[in-house]
Length: 194
Image (cartoon, rainbow, N blue to C red):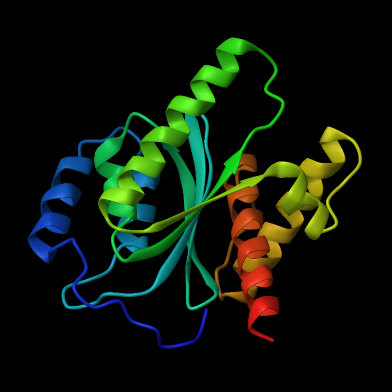
């Protein structure tokens, strides 16, 4: 994503952001509210951003601005206000598609979560790009056992967060996967532009 790209005429207004923030203050998870406040644009700001998501009942998300990790977290798929607020200024939603869910119940739950994220993105005219886990994990060299993949994804996410200037000790697993999905997308787009 080129530096300094701006999206004019974002669908969200500053009063919308303030109203959503007020609604989220009562949310029991204060960390989610702080992360969303950090990730959303301020008055007069419209940015070209990437939102990467690992969908589930509690979805991991990572927001990138100008190719750098801005914020990350875990958000319930039922928190539509929070999801919509995260979409402010987002140009592209990169979302994981699970190709081999453990059960039919899991498959339905993942599809419902993905649908909520994709619907919010489309309502804001963001491009939706689906990626399966084997694609982004293979491109980033994440392989092996489930435990090894988890450790490697968290290490890559921590490295991206530190590189972006964040002081952090740990990133939740779902958020780490979302960070890695975002890193995969940025790397792929950079290679296309070469």
